[in-house]
Length: 71
Image (cartoon, rainbow, N blue to C red; front, side):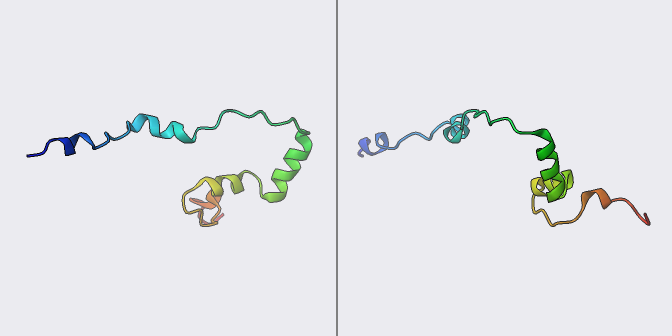
């Protein structure tokens, strides 16, 4: 039986190294006026917009309204 064929198989890469392949180092962003940043957040819908974007399947419902019956 030929045993040389088994030696050609490459071992799998360790799972712990996989996430680091796409790692991007910290990039410092330039400072900006906090008043303008706050205005921009208000224009796009405030913190609730960021929360919806972070949820899997962001269905557009307002998470602050969950559990508020009759208010």
